[in-house]
Length: 135
Image (cartoon, rainbow, N blue to C red; front, side, top):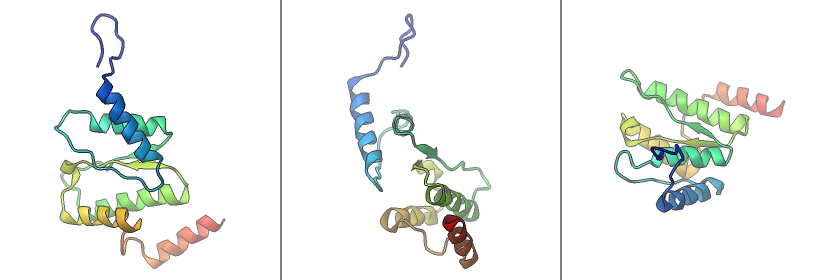
């Protein structure tokens, strides 16, 4: 929050506590968190700040009216290629309003439990990625 007259950022203690918690989770290999709160409470902002502080890229799918399972799968493919092939530390940020189909939750669950989404890549795509990672 900006102070009106002096234009300094005012940070409350609970913000620092939550920022610290999110930062600790991001430092853990394979760490994940479910942030719950009312809209406008700063969960996304704090997550983005913690990611920035940790030097991580933030990936958040852009959901449109025409966004469906195919677009979701392509976004997940892109995310996994970025993190896997480029070894780029990434925060995957998704809100409840971005989950348009139940299959989205199933894919997120698979990512959290096994670090992969079943039947996401074809055999040709896997072979292509293996060639790229060897080179």
